Image (cartoon, rainbow, N blue to C red; front, top):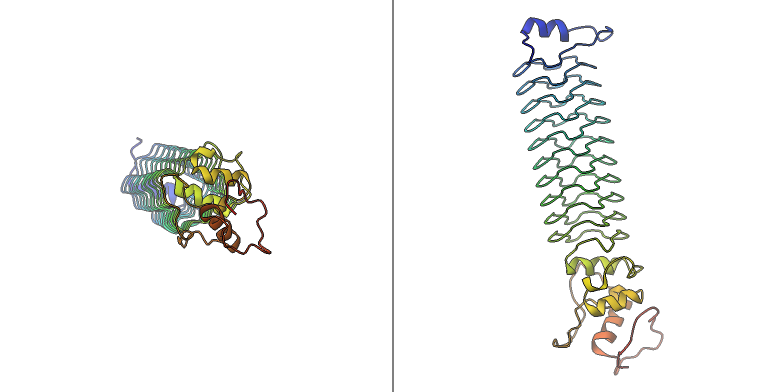
Length: 329
């Protein structure tokens, strides 16, 4: 690191924004420096030591912070739009209220960073290390988080609409209430993740691992899964209920109860919601799980499959597409 004193900092930072020569602070040791509200527009700070530095409300638009050490730096309300933060270490940094729009953070480390409810629209976070980072309420719609490590991070009520989350590690991540509509989660590791009340409408979960994930109250309408998607049986059933157009080309029939698989093949996966096992007695009424929100048609077919049609009035009943093979009428 290049040694620098306070006088040099003032000479390089406190300049007119119209000057052509941008401050060159590459590899400079600025640890614990007070750069509050400093004008560092397009500054060269690559490989600089900014640990514990105060950069609150600093202007870092288009700054080059490539491989900079920003651990525990105070970047509250700093403007980092269009900044190059590739390979930078922002672990434990305070980024609440910071503007990271259009910035790039390829393989940046944000372990336990506090990003708060801020706007990261179109931010590039490819391969970023965001383990246990606090992103509650953040706006990350259309953000590129491909192959990022979000394990254990808090993304409660985060806006991730249209975000690229392919092959991300979201194991044990808290995504409750998050908006993931139209997001690409193909190949993502979501094992043990909390997706309760999350919006996954038209999200791509092809090849994703959701084993042990909590999907209570999640919106799975038109969510794409395939044979490589790993989900617990209960979650498969919930998905099948809200996606009656699904076919066996979407998932392995063996991943659902046998009777469920046959009804999916017929185009009515919501018809049977209980594993029909010869050693079990048929339940007397359809499942009462409030998440299922069964239609009258589904309840009618469920009763026929599980209880038979004896003494039932079926006049005018719509049974189109239902697989009633072996049902006693």
